[in-house]
Amino acid sequence: MLTVTAAADDPLEIDADLLVVPVFKGGIEGPGTAAVLAALGMPALPVTPDFRGDIGQHLVLAAPGLRVAAVVLVGLGRMDATDAERLRRAAGVAARAAAGVERVATTLAQVHAGASAVQAVAEGFALGAYGDRRFKGNDDGEASRLRSVVVLGPSGLLEEARAALARAAVYARATILARDLVNLPPGHKRPPALAAAVRDAVGGACEVTVKDEHDLAREGFGGLLAVGRGSTAPPRLVELRYRPPNPLGSVVLVGKGITFDSGGLSLKRGTAMATMKSDMAGAAVVAAVCSALADLGIRLEVTGLLAVAENLPGADAQRPDDVVRIHGGTTVEVRNTDAEGRLVLADALHYGAALRPDAMVDVATLTGSAVTAVGQLAAAAMGNDDELLDALEDAADVAGESLWPLPLWPDLERLLDTPVADMNNTGEGAGGGAIIAGLFLRRFVGDVAWAHLDIAGPAFLPDKLAGHYLPAGGTGFGVRTLLAWLERRAE
Ligand code: BES
Ligand code: MN
Ligand code: ZN
Image 1 (cartoon, rainbow, N blue to C red):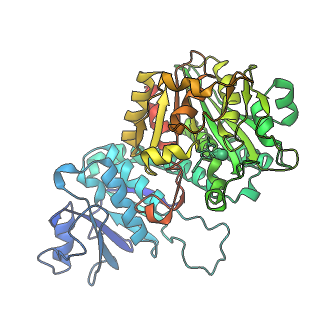
Image 2: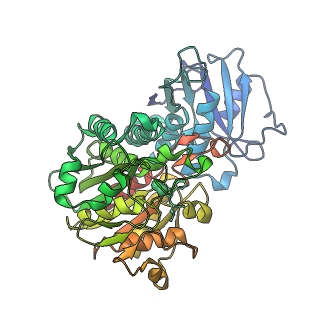
Image 3: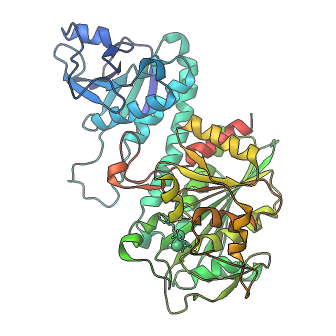
């Protein structure tokens, strides 16, 4: 990951390869921009049809006579509407434009006074420079070469800026951990391998316990076992424990960790099966969040539960019509083996509720219906506690992520009925699939304050939705929202 530092230098004196300066909509120069243009002998801003200072736009200028080789003008949109998220996006655009150089300096953070601007700019650069090169040859020229970014600001605010940069580095590192786990090919992260990868990545930051298939059988985790049966790689429940001294409260985070979702015997069609390596994104988010708690000094006891299984149609796979006994004893008639996420989450939620946390949040790529409802740039949020949902929405706002509420209509509960077991796993054919999945999960949380984030859309993006600091593929969506929520909750 690139390094971001703060300095109070004059942008015209700084030793870097490239200088990034802001421009507002309509060609209004942002901090430092007029001086840089003057040094380039440009009395006015080159406002072209391709660059009007809109958010998402940029313009590269050669910089003869300056210490830097080039200047990048980045658009920030309307001057009266700039916020942290616009700075984060502008920084992401700049990071992409700077992929060919190593050292960047920028005056972007001077647009706003305060730590949140510095944090947003640093996050935008770190996340915008991300690319997954693990399975690419060295001679392939796509990786970002960007190594360092200097955030220029007034000298009086350097202390504050450094604290903000430290926080940004933690947020970005955690987000990138989640992206890397999601982007890993499914054959490289079958359940025991994913559990081992999480232990490697998070073991320094919290206590890691892994329940294997024997533990799961002894302790009654029937959902995980049923889903995992069709694969030769057995399921795992990964427990992450973060215990700070003198905690102010306790939280359980649950992540769906289907390392590949073929649908099982209710096999997905080919086009729907592609990208299903991302079906463990919830687990990746929870692992990434746990990896960052100590660095942020969060004074909450946090338990992360990763429900990890591979949903394949092997000879011993669970069948439609099978009945599964979830942790705690509730029986579920499996009508469709492709509604597997709720089976593994039910186990983990019931187990998590028994820990009696103050709040529990699950994160899951749970339904195509959530994608239909809110699109791929937001998560659908549901739960049994309005205060918790409001707090998560506020945190998402700060983090630059979007949650959109869906109602858990009580009248739809009856779709979960079945004559053969306590409930069925689809509530099929009557619409509202994301809501029905939420209603299903709610039955396993008891009276614990609980929220469910269906990240099926934003966890993994197609090329056409990638841009600024969001890559195609794994995004790490949810990591920064949950970190911001935990930080605020522990204040
Ligand atoms: N993992 C999928 C949901 C999903 C779909 C995630 C698209 C990301 C993108 C989940 O396990 C699933 O298959 N859900 C079914 C449930 C249905 C069979 C009741 C769905 O949403 O179609
Ligand atoms: Mn499925
Ligand atoms: Zn799934």
